[in-house]
Structure formats: structure tokens, C-alpha cells
Length: 249
Ligand SMILES: C[S@@+](CC[C@H](N)C(=O)[O-])C[C@H]1O[C@@H](n2cnc3c(N)ncnc32)[C@H](O)[C@@H]1O
Image 1 (cartoon, rainbow, N blue to C red):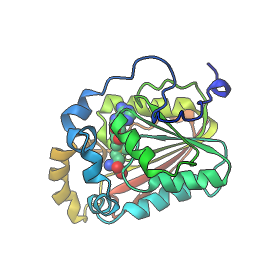
Image 2 (image 1 turned 90 degrees about the horizontal axis):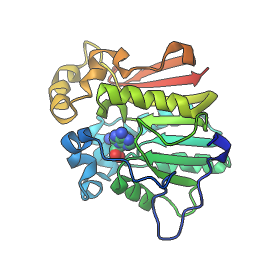
Image 3 (image 1 turned 135 degrees about the horizontal axis):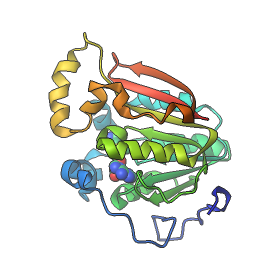
Image 4 (image 1 turned 120 degrees about the horizontal axis):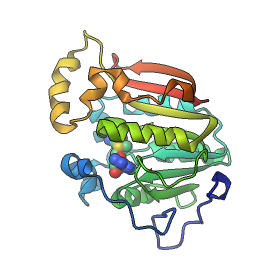
């Protein structure tokens, strides 16, 4: 299938989740069951975590700032096709889809958990130009060069290194040449940052793959340099968070 033929049907009434093929839904990865059942997999997880103030607390008050940074990096006009890889709690997708709607574009949001996709659908206005895909970020059933831009917001730190690498390779594959990939995630705080020492032990227990991004920024496993035309990196909150802005060659 080529990218032009990959057009999702309008959302059928009563059916909340659209898949791209008739194949069985992808299995839920073991790391989600093992380490993130409480945050995403449990059917009650959205009831607990779908609170902007709680997400903001978890991000030490930086939630809105990081959303604004992602939106600024993506730009004011967002025509064409955009992909958000993985649902997020809070307002990011509503704000992003509003901007995309104003530009006449469309947004696909891909996540492996039906409970998260259903939660996202419930948050969005009925006329939002958003399609939901139940897929694995590390093995997308999407043609090459489908999207004008791809956003990854706090997904990579939750994935083991091999899955993270595969997710980035997939993001690079499905974005068009000249298209943009924006990544917002953890990074290693500066040496003077008190949370560098206080938060790391907590993260190590709650989010066991996140310290990879602290120990060595390279472990975010950026796509190979030859596939990338430009890379900009900015950090926030004393280096604890980073935004990477890539243009595919
Ligand atoms: C984006 S991350 C974390 C977002 C952040 N904690 C927030 O809510 O702002 C959480 C999402 O990633 C999804 N996810 C994790 N691994 C995935 C994979 N391999 N494929 C697709 N979605 C995945 C989970 O199902 C969950 O909905």
C-alpha cells in the first residue's frame, strides 16, 4: 500500500477504535504489563491519571511549558497529515488537533492500548479531525512516507532500548522526506540540579527504562545521521527535559 492509498475511513458510529488492517490487534508488550499496568493498562488508570494537575505535578510543574514547546516546534500552520505516537493524559492532543483543524490537516494517534484510545476519544470534540490507530509503535502497519510530521511526547523513556530504537526507526520511516519529527522526553539534569539525585531513585523504581535517558543522552537512540537533515535540541528545567526537533533527509 502506498502512502496516498492509506486513508482511514471516517469513524464508524459506535466504533471508537480504527485499525489499519483486518489483522488481529497487536499483543500488549510485556513491559507495559510488567511496569506500567498501574499507569496505562488497568481499566481504571484513566480515571486516576486523567487530571492535568496530576500530570503537571509528575512533571514538576512543567507540563504546560513542555506542551507549548512541542506546539511551538511543530509550528502554527499544520496542514497535511500528522501522527502522534502514543496517547498522553491531559490536553496535548486536544490543543494539537485544534491547530491542525484550523490548518485543514488531519491527525492520527497511534497507541497499543484500547483503554487509552477510548479515553482519548472521550476527551476530543466529536468533529476533531482525529483518527485512532490501535498499533504497536515499534512495528507500525503504515506505509513509508505517509506523514508530514510526527510527535513523540514522553513515550521513549517508557520503552526498553530495543523497542525505543524500533519506535524511532518507524517514526523516521513513516515521515515524508523533509518531514519533521519532534520528541519531548527526559534528559540528564545538570550536575547542580537537586532532582538529579533525589528523583533518579524514584524513577528507577517507577519507570525503570527512564534512567537510560539520564545516564546518556545518546541512548535516546536518535535515527542515523544520514537519515536526518537537521537536528535541534533544547533542554528545559535545568536539563531534566529535552525537545529534539529533526527533519528527515
Ligand atoms: C506517551 S506515553 C506517556 C505519556 C505521559 N505519561 C503523559 O501521559 O503525558 C503513554 C502511552 O504510551 C503507550 N505505549 C507504550 N508503549 C507503546 C507501544 N509499543 N506502542 C504503542 N503505544 C505504546 C501506552 O499505551 C500509553 O498510552
